[in-house]
Length: 253
Length: 252
Image 1 (cartoon, each protein chain N blue to C red):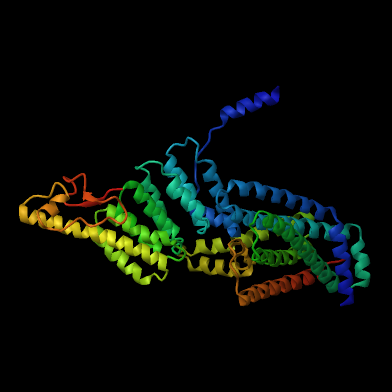
Image 2: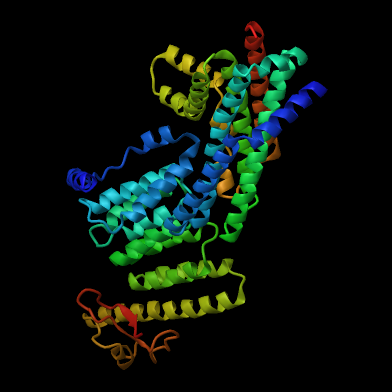
């Protein structure tokens, strides 16, 4: 446990200092500026538009942080042979767990900071509602899940570009899985329907985790729903992490 | 120089295409970012409101329709699509068709039937106005003034008796003393009209023609005096007696 904690600490310190973190933060600030502009254009719906665009900006920028940050960090340690040094002291499972928890924590810090900043801007524009942070929690769950998927792809592929692109495609698949399932409901082919349903449950389902819509309109979600969604994400993370450990252990280091 | 030339040429090539993708398509490709896509469609509609667009009304209504299908709670999109875009009497039915369709997406909001009623008011169809205002009143959050305004639409539609029935049933549900006093006044106002219209009809039965002046009802002994008008300056026969024989109006 202490070993995992050490890796977590190293990753968090390193991750926050990295240029990727700063770059993503600047990108978020730019999107926040866009949200203010869009809010002015959205006559009669300024408050809703500000909350809506701010939450979307947090999610998109944090996805960049995951894709660029984890992949960059993972492959740099591989290229500089730092990984070998770590693995000489830390077990493989602890090394990966430390990396995953570290990056989930970095995302948590990022989402928290971005939400507070967006919350201040919302408050100045009289658009703040506390449910906004429920939306942030949904984003955190979604991004944590993609941290584990990004780690899995980083373990599977030898090229960083492939790992980064695969994570983005997995995100897109998760976003559209519900639409794809809906489309197949009109199909007469039973095999297609079963296959699509199986695929839908296999890929992460963003529609289940997402809470942006409720947060925008100030709807409070029941605690049991939040519990179930968090449990769903936790199980998915553990599943992806187990696969990552399995793939990682099969490779030569 | 080259940059200027290219800009000039590309400007010539540019032709704005006013196109709204299918709502189902937009829904499928926006994933969990549906509210954001709705917001973008809404802003697009607002920005294009003053553009010269072929088939402007249909096009803009389609833009706002896409917005409300993606986010059924985007109330301003209903407002713009249903009441701002239609600018003349020919377009208002299109606005109403959009609002009727959109009302199914957000059935609990009083504003949608209110705006439909408002459109009918612009068309001069007071009975339809009253019908939709009635629907709006039954929904949570509807303002009290909507409830009492109903009487005026029944009056304008020449259905004062319906207005009396409506207001009397409404007064049973109102506990606010000030509103009850106002309702009492409106009921009296409409009851007087119903009473005078009844007497005008009796006049027609007795003499075979409609009275030309309201005073004739007193002169022929059908009533002792013309009742006081609690709202207007007094009662009189409708100016257009050919169209509305025996109808009573207030002088405002």
